[in-house]
Structure formats: C-alpha cells, structure tokens
Amino acid sequence: MIYLENIHVTFNAGTPLETRAVKGIDLTINEGEFVTVIGSNGSGKSTTLNTLSGDISASKGKVLIGDQDVTKWSVSKRAGLISRVFQDPLIGSCENLSIEENMALAWHRGQKFRFVSALNDKNREVFKKQLARLGLGLENRLGDKMGLLSGGQRQAISLLMSSLQPAKILLLDEHTAALDPKTAAFVLDLTNQIIQENKLTTLMVTHSMQQALEVGTRTIMLHEGKIVFDVSGDERKGLTVRDLLDLFKQNQQGQELSDDSLLLS
Ligand SMILES: Nc1ncnc2c1ncn2[C@@H]1O[C@H](COP(=O)(O)OP(=O)(O)OP(=O)(O)O)[C@@H](O)[C@H]1O
Image (cartoon, rainbow, N blue to C red):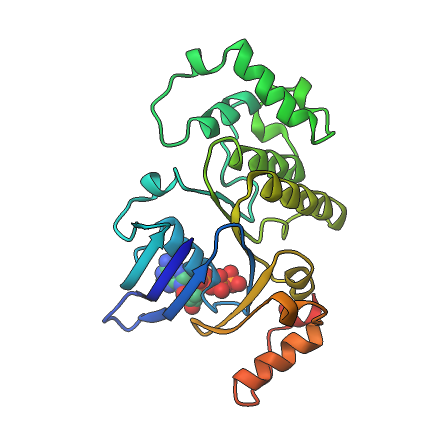
C-alpha cells in the first residue's frame, strides 16, 4: 500500500521563481494496483513520482509505504522498495558498463557488492535466462557495453533490471515515449508481463490518454498540481478518450483541456 498524504511541493519558495508544483495530493494505492497517470505539461506528474521515490522532498505532507513512514528516507534507502524506469533510456543504466555489469548492479541495488564476486557463472545464467525472454539475442551479448544498444533494447533491459531485486513498487515515467511505435508496443507488453509476474504496484506516467485507458487498473489525472479525477473498476471500463475529456471539463467548471499532446495521442 502507498499513501501520499496531503503532499505539497513548492520549488524556489519565497523567491520570484516560486512554483507550487504539487498542491495537496492525497492518494492511496493498494498493493498490486497499476495506476496510469495523465495530465498536461507541468501538471505535477513527475514531481509526484519524484516525491514517492525520494528524489524530491515534499514541502509538506507524508509518504507511507506499507506501514512505514518513508517521508524522511533517502532515495537509496527507498530504492530497496521502489524501482524506476525513465523516458530516456540513457537514465537508469550505465552506458560504460556491460549488460552483465548493469544487471549485477540492479540485482544488488542498495547493497554493498563487488563485481568480481557478483559476476559468477551462476548469476550469469540468471541474467542470460532473463535476457533470452526478450527474444532480441541479448543473452549472447552479456559483455557488450550498454551504450552500444538501441533505445528499445536499453529500455527492455531496464525493465528486466527493475524486477531483478525484490522491490514491490515500479515507477514508469513515460518510459515508452522515446521509442518508435513497434518498439513501444513491445516494451509495454513486457511491462505488463513483469508487473503481473512480480505482483508489482505500479504508477505509469503517460502522455497518451489512449494508453492510459488501455493499460493498468486505474487512471488518475493531474491538473495544476492536483488530482482532478481518479477512475477505476467498472467506472473505468469502456471509457473513451472523449469521456476523459468530458470528465476533465466537469471537474474544471467547464474548462476545456488545451494540451494538444494529450488530445492528439
Ligand atoms: N527542480 C525544479 N525546479 C523548479 N521548478 C520545477 C522543478 N521540477 C519541476 N518544476 C516545475 O514544477 C511544475 C511541475 O513539473 P513536473 O515536471 O512535475 O510536471 P509534469 O506533469 O511531469 O510535466 P511534463 O508532462 O511536461 O513532464 C512545472 O511548472 C515545472 O516547471
């Protein structure tokens, strides 16, 4: 269970550049839920994910994971509970390290370890088995530098890496946005498999309203730092992008959504 309790995030508080990015978010996510997060540019989606991962400290409010109050935990301490895949395939893996070194790092995330002992035959077999399921032949390229791979290959490996250790929460920040449509569909399919196999509680930010409805079990929309709607279960089944736009309008006193990137996707 994840609880975000009255989260506020203000950047550059008290200066002319003050930005109230998140304004009182209350969100409870049950174990195993897969929440898709939509909202226009600057609505606070990444800031909300960053507050959960610990990359940003909330100006006010509490973050709880299970029965633990993690509000004051560092990113590295939270990394034992949370794994993350970013939009940019270059973030989240080290291009100068090999595939197997990246996987060893992911496997030992948050722990002290040495490559010399982590890269043994037994572990290599585990990495190979995981990579083989991608069907990209990467199981035969364990020693290749990550920087040699395409964006889609890196994103697929990042997803595998996110499930190598027992984190229970997966944060996906537009992780298919930089990929071509075919690779994006492949990575999304892999995402679904990994979430189901590992029973992960997931938050996925997407700029596509269609994608937000097609995957996951619940959809929330942020607008100007607040949650403007939250749909799941029967209410969500059969919803169309048009319905989402109408929901937005209802909750915003007739205001139309003006972000083309959301409307067009
Ligand atoms: N580190 C920061 N310093 C100052 N302002 C920031 C910082 N990070 C985000 N902001 C501001 O906070 C607001 C919310 O940004 P955020 O990145 O959370 O939006 P978003 O919904 O993820 O947008 P996008 O869809 O464009 O990625 C924006 O006005 C942004 O400019």
